[in-house]
Image 1 (cartoon, rainbow, N blue to C red):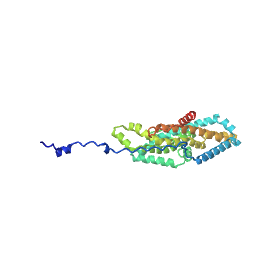
Image 2 (image 1 turned 135 degrees about the horizontal axis):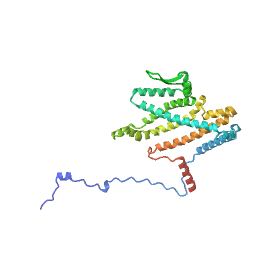
Image 3 (image 1 turned 180 degrees about the horizontal axis):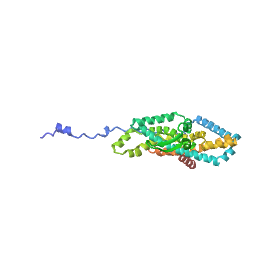
Image 4 (image 1 turned 120 degrees about the vertical axis):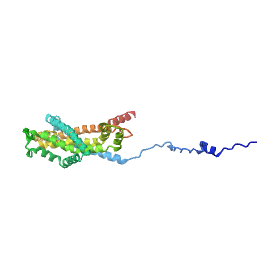
Length: 333
């Protein structure tokens, strides 16, 4: 009688392992079962009486302030309403807006050039850019404006001469640099010094790993700048740039010392004749507040536009969207 075949050691070693049985699979942890709320009991949020007390005090203080502003006859609100849209005030407002736009555009254009020079590998350009920023950030704006207004004392005449020829043209400095042009030059140079640092910090905020990845893909410098650097740098540039724009709008009031007919100087001309100082100052204040509010709204939506894709949770709702949601919830109730 033949004995049963015994598998060899080689066959036993090469045989595939048996699949694990049900006993070898670890059991999944049981999900916690929420405790049932007893009948007749409801979940009540935590009471915070401090919030109600602080909110009530804030509303009370605001109501007292509004009552003081509306009921104080010294403010002369009828006079404020009469001069708010007068021709002289509106001309000053238009000049203020024009100066703000021109100075911001020229300042950021020059500031971008200075930032590129600061980030370049040329030590001469780096030194010149650093020196410009250092000088114009260290000098008060009013001092710069007064210096440029009196530049004729240093250079009475501006001329262009050929090395081995005659004079091409010559012009007196006082005839060339009037008060308005002096204000544009002084404000632009002051703006450019701060804009250079804003642009430089925004460009340096971009992760270098992304630039290395773009270089490994063979992307050109222009495309890298448009598609990678600027969209990410704008998130860091926009908040300080918006603050600088609003600061420039308010900083144009300094040029009233140069007799430039901006918003504040136009108000001063009126109250020098009527002696109604407080109402005319309120007129200028209301226009500054209105324009600043519009610029703030524009800055908010620009920052929201360039923040797309920056967070996984998505963009937060706008104030208008929150208001509509609140109305829908109130109507649904």
